[in-house]
View 1 (cartoon, helix red, strand yellow):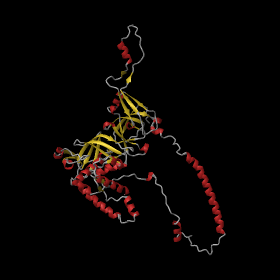
View 2 (cartoon, rainbow, N blue to C red; view 1 turned 90 degrees about the vertical axis):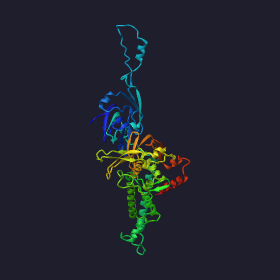
View 3 (spheres, one colour; view 1 turned 120 degrees about the vertical axis):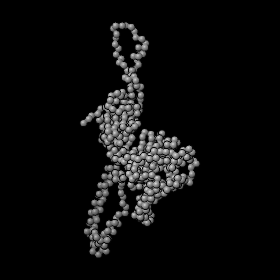
Length: 519
């Protein structure tokens, strides 16, 4: 069994467990990115992004590890899984030895320049400059995690053995009993003893009373037989309320995109959710026939696939669709204002996220076929945020793009890994209507928009948190326009709408959201 010490260089390969707390130095991905699964630490199966020290990304081989000169300054070992502060000093300064040698051959005093050089520290490698790089939680790999979707990673061990965070969190679990709970336990025991005594006294008294009473002439019904209707009514009559508890371990946290409201119009409104069916039953409206509804939805799905086939090759579409509305692509084909709004809506879902595309190394995909298409057919008249139109030259001039598509009839499965299931559901919904997120490369995102390959440059990402309740990205479109895309809770989005927004559409969207919440 290998033993690791602080300062050791560790090479990890895909699907290997991390043996110690490491600082990411370099990886097989660009920009020193790697993906880890932290299920053994926090129970989450979603992949997390970790980014290494960019100043050390040149380290690719064992020979490079012998050439590096660095000094890591990290905080003391602690059990905090979500915080880390540290830094790395590259090509650090090492002072010369202060041991002075007496020269017996000469007694001449040293010049002022020699004295100054003695005081100045010297570098081990004068060709390199000293650099200081910070290290945060996003730059370390914790012991117990598993490397995913990354061919290899080189890291430096900073905590090993009992100093790792997973070991510091594996001690004796502290008691969570509060002071009031400790005081109430004896009182509950006393109440139980009192109730037991009362029941015992009442039982003895009742038995004595029954033995002294004559039932021969009493008009009682015979409920001793378990097959008697009176016995059944007697038993059921004792139950008035049924209480049940739900445990989180038995729930399936599956998110599906069912409905949306775009520019005041509802799409996917025919979808029957469990909430809708339950509300109809509670209100006494039991006219919803599930079989009839499933048949109708199947016809709508086939119609929707036919409309999509008129726009692009169905290479990335799932076998079973959760979001179904044949009118969606009919509006897109008309190239109207509503169609442009729909494209903008689902393009936002495909771009504004931190989702990762899982790479299936063992699955053989068909060789892509390249063909030419004209981008102005679909994106010649896109409206930007604030109703600003693209330059007229870009509208009239055909945008010739090179498209990568699979052969007709072949299927390419894209597995999205997100930090939350709702984010993955949004990106998957955009994929299933024809706007598929394909690849992320540093600050570039490749999107298949109705058969056209478009690359967006991500200039900045402001991730979602509980305080902001929204996520924002600043992107540059292939046409050169820079726009801000934002998604989040309706309460914070409405506060930031421009004053010249159509109030009718805003109010109508609010009513649609309330309707979706009731469903």
